[in-house]
Every structure is written in structure tokens, then in C-alpha cells.
Amino acid sequence: MELKDRILKVLDELYNNSRVPTMQELEIKTKEDYAEVLEIMEHDGLIFGTEITKSGRKKVHFVWTDNTKITTKGIEYLKQNKQD
Image (cartoon, rainbow, N blue to C red):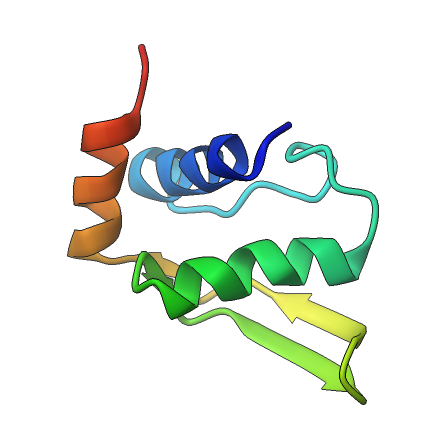
């Protein structure tokens, strides 16, 4: 699955079901890759509230998405890029 597809899936799930898809649902194998997708989305202002615990530069210990929310920018991105 491409990065853009993962981003759209996260945004769609947040918008429609108020939840972030799991690593398995996004076809991601490592916590580091999962965290990277969510960090990119936060950095771009599409979501907020994700908590990621790391040690060092790369090692991810925990990704907590219970408080993750979609922003208005994220909703706009979803509506402009979603293919039905």
C-alpha cells in the first residue's frame, strides 16, 4: 500500500469511525513505519493527538492513538483526494 493510500485510510477511519486503523489494516510491518506515517500526518496538520514513545532516533516503543483526531485540513484533504 502506498503512503498516500495509508494517509487516506487513516483520515477516512478517523472521519467516519473516530478511530485510527491498526498496523495490520494499513499493511505495515513495524512500529517504526506506523509511527512514521502518523508523524508525517501530524507534521502536515492532517491529524493531532497521537502519542509516540521512542528511545534514540528510531526505536519506537509505543504508539498511542486513543486521542488522535482529524483536523479541518485533514477533512479537506480527504474530500479532495478520496476516490469512491
